[in-house]
Length: 335
Image (cartoon, rainbow, N blue to C red; front, side):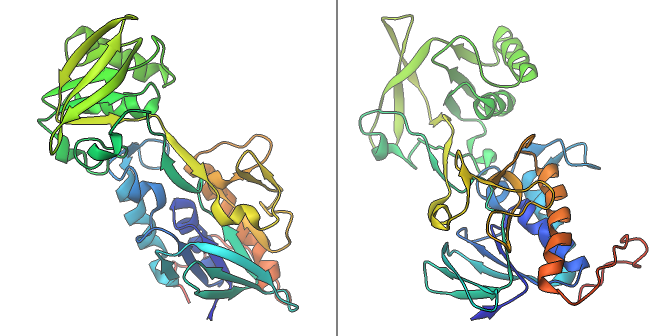
């Protein structure tokens, strides 16, 4: 049995920052995360993607943000149960929670913080014959290391921010980039759409709208794709890689069976302290929902700070909490 003050489910950026805020109040934390490394989506899905809305950093790569957060919480020495999924929760008579993973590891604490982002992700796959045959052999749903695809021929499908961002990025690094979208309008940010159109006008991107990939062919690896456009016309494109970026489907998994109040795959919380309907369980970051919610990392950081103040009262019910600025505390020295 692993005993701690706070069990944090999800080791993404908001979960990591929770350790810092809890640590300032002398509360120990232990992570449970189904991924093999801490960092959540920033480490697993888009480590090389730049983030622009972290205060003090005009631009920072997702992987660098995680490195900085891990360094920031080092003094508080959190524990980790990685590569395991939080499966069940039980509440004991003395108001402790016991969280058991899918591998049987048990954890005990008076407070649970769910910081699981949007949950576990599965890519939305197009309905194309033999698609699974080429997965990992030219068909990729997540771009972790973009340098692998430099100087290659690339086809991207999709009309959201991810498709636009990567098309713009590869216009500077790939041998050839084609963006295929089923409509003639895009769901991405306006500035990205404008950049895309300029690159297309200058011949940096082959833009095909009202078009759809219908077939892929090759032997050991993908070789060509067939694109249907303008109602009845079809064109074959030679390519090294195809990225169908139609988004990821989030799933809460076993947490959805814990008796928490849910709304559209998110956990409803009280915005005064981000507590759930179960006393002692909190939710911060993209996994929660409340009026005016913004799914931004910086908002999750704020939620973690407020939540920690509330959690203190449950972890140390007989102690008086005194709020101090980190500058007044003379640095962060952990425990």
